[in-house]
Length: 281
Ligand SMILES: [Zn+2]
Image 1 (tube, rainbow, N blue to C red):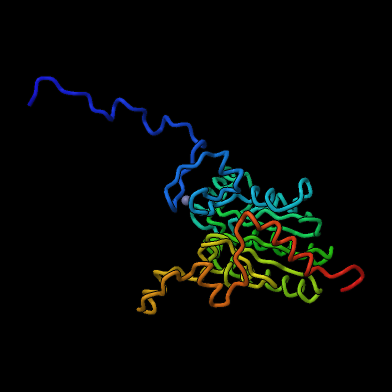
Image 2 (image 1 turned 180 degrees about the vertical axis):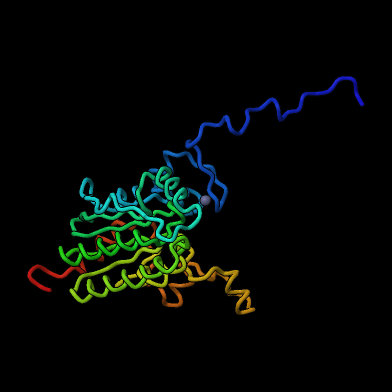
């Protein structure tokens, strides 16, 4: 063993925790390092591989609706711990603080390229975008507002499915939202569902796949149960690309895939075709 010891290189550099946060982002798909400003300008799509990063509900609203047209609905509606599920109350508070939202969906009325709509955006940051009683209620009220005011309805989904802390009360929201959409449809008004990464469970099995048009972002994961559960249940190897938007487009579950950069234009175009003309309906 030497008398003198070299200082470890590791101690010379800055610690990882010294890096200012929020300036640089690493793409989880290709590993590219992208600065925050560029990423923001590109609606959080990777410059190298077109990976679509997760957007917050506020970012979605800003990206899609005409400037200053958003009028939020039911901003104060929040979840309650009806079953006394251990730790749920604390989780609600922590997620409200983290997201600045009372509940995991942001809903409101506005215009999209001049078309009157209600826009509902599930925020994946809030307990994995899970479907709770309050999320179901907010979605239903937004759909009913659209029906009443003769607006198109748009729901942007990103969800792990039903919120387990609310048990059957959460599952009931699947039927409630579906009922509201059926009434909206009967009124001759359009509903466009946009599925983003990831959309799973009870959300996939209800309103997210009930659109007159079901649209998805590229490469997003869409499914009911996860691939591991299916593999273990069926004892079969799953085909490659299973549960990606591209696979599901090929097999007819969704109608089209739209890159984020074209989303606003595409939605506007579809609404223009689908909205009933003045005096009709
Ligand atoms: Zn990338």
